[in-house]
Length: 368
Image (tube, rainbow, N blue to C red; front, top):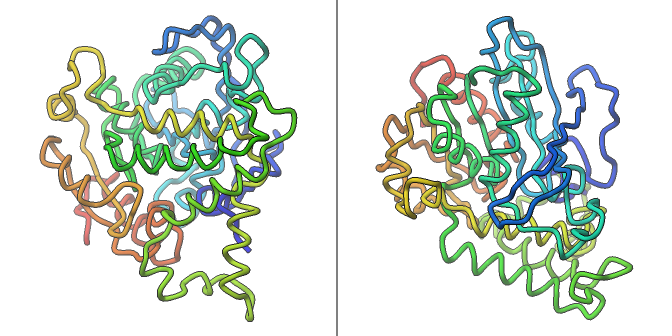
C-alpha cells in the first residue's frame, strides 16, 4: 500500500533515504553548508545544511537551470513525475536542482542539529529563510546566474511564489501546483489541529522525548489524512485503484494511521507545519504585509495550477490571488485526488501537469 511519502515523493520512502550514488534517472546528492545563517526568527544557526540533488549539467552561460524546491517532509526525489523521457523536464537539456526544506530530517532539522538548538529549541524557519539559503547555494556554490523556472508543488509552490517576490529578475517563469502565496486562517487552524493531535501524547514531553511519541504521530496522521484527498475521492473509493484485490476500507485507514510518513520525527513534523503556517509573501521586506502589492511585483510569467478539489489550498484561494499577479495563467487541475493531484497522483493528473508545464516552459498556450 502506498504511503503518504509516496503521494508526495512518488518514488522514494522517507524510511529509506536515497544513496549518494546517482541512479540512471535519479539525482546526484550534495550538501551545502552555510555558517552563521541568520533566520527571520532572530536565531542564528551555526551551521545551516541544505541537502539537494542535481540532474543534468549547467551550461557555460549558467542559465539553463530549473529549481524544484521540496514540499512537506519530502526529499530530492519529489519531482520525478516531472523529469525524464517524454516529461516536461529533460536532464539532457536542463540543469535541475531539487532542494530539501529545513526540517525534513536531512537538511538542518530539529532532529539532526546539536544542542543548544536540538529538538524543540530549533528555530522556526520560514519559507523566506529557505529561499535565502537556496539562493546562496545557487549563486555561491553552483554558479547559477539565472533560472529558466522555479517549479513547486505544495510547500514548493509557496517557495516558488516567494522566489518570484524576493528575486523578481532571477527567473523567467514560475509554476505553482497545489499551493498558494499565503497560508490563510483556515489552513492555520488545520495545521494547529494536527500539531495539537501530536503534542497531546504524554510521550511528547514538550518535544524532549527519548522515543518518538507514536500515539501522537498516529493521531496527527489521521487528522492529516482526512484533508489529503477530496470527499469525492473517498466516496468513489479511488483508493482501490492501486490496492490489491480485497483490500478493505478499514485496512486503508489503518495504513494511513500507522504508516503515513515512515520514520518521521515528531519535532521535524511540527517544524515544517510552523513553516507552512507562517508563509505570506506580503511579509517580504518592503511590502509591509500587503499581499496584493507583493503579488503585483512579480515579473516572471506564472502558471498557477491549483487542484480543483484541494482541501489544503482551496481553488478559491488561488482564484483570489491570481488577479493580483501580472502575467498569470490560472489553470486548475481537473482531479478528484485532492491535494496530491498537484504532484501527479493519478496517471491523468501526471499527464495534465506534464503537458501543460511543458507547453508553458516553451511559451506555448496551455489547455484546460
